[in-house]
Amino acid sequence: MKTLAPIKRSLRILIPGLLIALALPCFFEPLQSQKRPQRIRLQLKWKHQFQFAGYYAALKNGYYKEAGLDVEIREARPGQEPMDEVLKGRADFGIGTTDVLLLRARREPVVALAVIFQHSPLALLARADRGIDSLHDLAGKRIMIEPHSAEIFAYLQEEGISSRHFELLEHTFTIDDLLQKKADAMSVYVTDEPYALRQAGLPYRIFTPRSAGIDFYGDNLFTTEEQIARYPGRVRDFLKASLKGWEYARKNPEEIVQLIYNEYSQRHSLEHLRFEARQTLSLMPELVEIGHMNPGRWQRIVEVYTQQNMLPADFDLNGFLYRTDQAPDLTWLFILFAAVSALALIAAGVATHVIRLNRALILSHQKLEHMAHHDALTGLPNRVLFFSRLNKAIAEPETEQLVLLDLDLDEFKPVNDTFGHLVGDRALQAVAHRFRASLQSRWPDALLARTGGDEFSLVARVQDPVEAAQMAQSLLDAVSTPISIREHSCQLGASIGIALHRAGETLEDFLRRADSAMYRSKARGKSCYSFAD
Picture 1 (cartoon, rainbow, N blue to C red):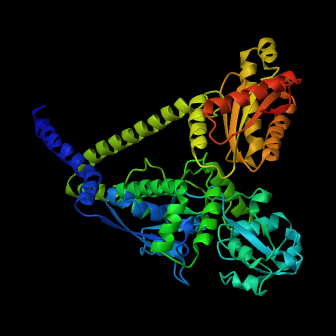
Picture 2: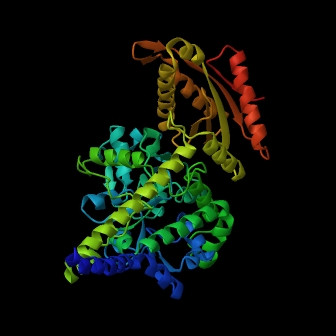
């Protein structure tokens, strides 16, 4: 036993020392940022305009400075491939399209940090005076489609239109070619180019892939695996400050319009920037947190790329989506200490265990956070999360009509009483699944929650009461067919109350009107919807 004493003493010295060394990158980076701001280069994918409003707001309001970052915002230059600037190390972060997936498939180490636009602004803009009233009228026409437009080609393919049906021109990125009839249609951002046609009084048609169920994400913020490994704290701080800037821009669009015009570019007039601001904010639903990325939607985008033979069938998203709990790559430290002594390997194993334990604790915390805000049976948001989001939506300035649907299942109690609670629970799960499926294609941003035993609530933005009625009918249709559970068949329905938010209306009054409308549907015979008042 005495022979082991020197080894034990060595371990007592080496292990704490190695643990401290392993932790140095985590502590050193914040300390370094306090001494002097860290230089950050953000590469835009186009010229200065409201499309990048959040980054200007973060810089102007000092959010980057507070994080110890000195950020340079670079606009794209003619002939430049913006995403390559990040890959070649000339920029640290970039704004990309969903085509970053193609880079990942080529084994480029890109990582998507956050999605800014929940819906892509990319669409086809056509001159109406060229006899183009539908997408199929593009046959035989001259069309400019810019690079990184897989969703446009997928849209055309979905509608049975191949590239041999029209003349594909090189995109010149100027709307003048459409005005001067050098092209009949071109890919554009709905946030930008339509303004010029409105000013010219030229009638036009816009065809968006969303009308065919192809709903890609818009601008995303991305970086590389190397940035995350070497500067994990800096990446988190930059992302947090950028999203904070976008929240500010969403609430103060006119201020950012003036900032862009006065300090960045007068390429667009103030009215043009205001138009862009309105259109841009419509792609950022207030019910969805800025930066939110849904792995399921990314997977759907992958499927579209795969159908276009642009991605391999076995493409894996693993490692592509950024997680805030990502641990830095400490391989170089392990190699260094392995060269010093074999005992360092033991300590490195201990450190690895600590890191894994820390990650497990983070995941456990996230799981508890999810459980606190979601219904355990259906997985839907619960009352706490729903009312929090609803209250926030009421406080936001309204660009579209806010609608609240109060749903109560019909004939659910007899199912519980006759077949038992197990079948009742399965029925609720089936109803929740059907409701989500009915909303996914047209209203993916609607917030659906289970707020009681057989009660559901939904809040969304709609264009008008007609769309609200269509949404309610979609939910009624979803629950109209019998639900088969084991050997039992359950026939349910739903009574729905619809309330459209009034300016200045309180949360309590909004909820009361929707609830009253739901009871009116009950009184009318159930399985129907009624509007408040």
